[in-house]
Amino acid sequence: MKINSKLPEIGTNIFTVMSKLAVDYKAINLGQGFPDFNTDERLQALVTKAMADGFNQYPFMTGVQGLREVISEKVKTIYGHQYDIDTEITITSGATEAIMSIMLASVGTGDEVIVLEPSYDCYLPAIKLSGASTVSVPMDPPTELRKTFQVDWDRVRANITSKTKMLIVNFPHNPTGAVIHEHDLDELEKIVQNTNILILSDEVYEHIIFDGVKHLSLATRPSLVERTFVVSSFGKTTHTTGWKVGYVCAPKEMTSELRKVHQFVVFTVPSNLQHALAAYTKDASTYLNLPAFYQKKRDQLTAGLQETRFKVLPSPGTFFLLADYSEIAKISEADFAIWLTKEYGVTVIPVSAFYKDSNAEASNHNLVRFCFAKKEETLANAIEKLKKV
Ligand code: GLN
Image 1 (cartoon, rainbow, N blue to C red):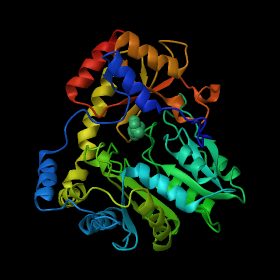
Image 2 (image 1 turned 90 degrees about the horizontal axis):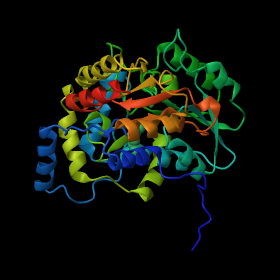
Image 3 (image 1 turned 60 degrees about the vertical axis):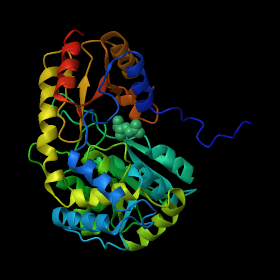
């Protein structure tokens, strides 16, 4: 039977499409963002232990208490804001469920949600299903002098209307690697003050940030805390993207509405994984060591790409970096990504896929995204292939 589609313009997402192409062409997959190395054996053992200890039934709808405690402590220590364990922290099925539940709980028909482009792919469908509409505000693309994408806050301001209900920000930023600075938070504070605009801050890469820079969570600003859902994910932090354990920190009234949706979308998240993550994350070195761990990989891929015809852009955060291929081909980003997979055996993601209209000229900057959450040998093999391009 035909269904009247709620998402007629949505197909299979770019990460799935490119991963399938990588398998079909036996290419090295630097596309979809996931590590090709295993998670820590200590964490694996903690999952087994949790199951042996009997943590195999429904945990609390809001998440295992020990895990909420660890998150509360961590956020207080690093960002200076204490979220209440019982009323302000919710464990979700990854950041993806968090984002969908937040959207369904807090915006609806007639509301506008501002999204900065390029943007992660799950925001737009979540906004659409909620009934609200998306207002896309492009970030400034890199130039010869300033080699990273950056937010033009005046452009954001110009797009605020009486219908604006929410603003989504994501730093460190997928796909560009851009990070947020104090002056960005200053602008954000000014934009939302005296309004009822909510903020969804997707901070899943909070612990993957380089060159000694510290991530600035929106939780560092009291005036932003009161209106912000801060979303994070253990997938990125513990090399377990397939476990789908994430969380949301938000003030009590906002959390209460989020939980009304969360309890009917998934109700709760696997008990053994939550108990294991709680025990593991108590040791702060498990996330504090990530910048050094990933910086080495970023530097390896950057140095390798510098020996090719790609022009690498700096990546201050995330496990992605962008490279310009304009010296190699004059074709669209999507065509380039497919061509590179088929002809040279390395899979990447076109940055245009992170725009509402991927085919538009304004969405194509001759840039592709490489994921460097890979073993040293995987990166080395990919670099050898890329040198031939
Ligand atoms: N976040 C991952 C990326 O950006 C993909 C996750 C997914 O495939 N849904 O590559």
